Image (cartoon, helix red, strand yellow):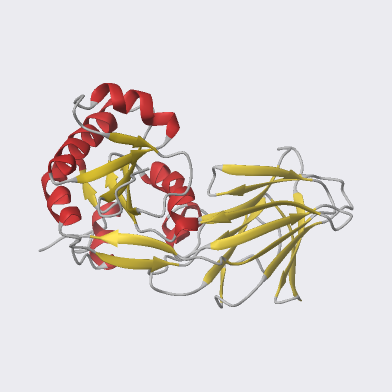
Length: 303
């Protein structure tokens, strides 16, 4: 942590096992140091970054909340950016992703554009986009709070054993919606609508839409379609005890807890929106077409 109140500070996170992430992060750190901006690095990456960065460049170890950090820059794919959200979200600090992955819906630019990134971070030449998040609480069969997490993309409640279906009773705003024998149930944000929810047959939602998406997974039921809910809605998923089938609850595919039969999973909009830094206007339609390589001319092509 910097002791100079006038010195600017940026946090850097990177994929722990990808050499190209370390190369890109090192280049960025050294260039912003020349502009008088200090870098803070999480403990798990500090040693490898310190060994890679020039000895005269000062970097700090980010052991906890640093109120001086103005931006969190993540080098990696969407998975790394989601992990970066764990740091940025409670601080209400913008997150900026440099894509080293494949799809990179959350990333803002590619690693080859480090020069542009350095200039715009120095000049604070970026806008901030707000993304709805989820809060999830898991209550055990006795009604005791067992686990809490946030989610940027989605929360999934999935069966543990392959040979049997999970029995889930879904309520929206404390009103019964449906009971499903299924592989699981997904509750997604608009950000997550292009991830797991999209693969499960849910609709794509533009990121500035404020809504929550509910998607049954391989459900045996007459009504098993995805539904889009108000951002003010609450969702309760009860793992029915009749068959004794436990579930596992995942937040962003990164944090999980087992939920015994009879547990209740309660979800609502998160207290904090995720702040995404954007360096230039990029309409979501353009991003969607590019990332999914959509055939905008149709499958027949031009005549």
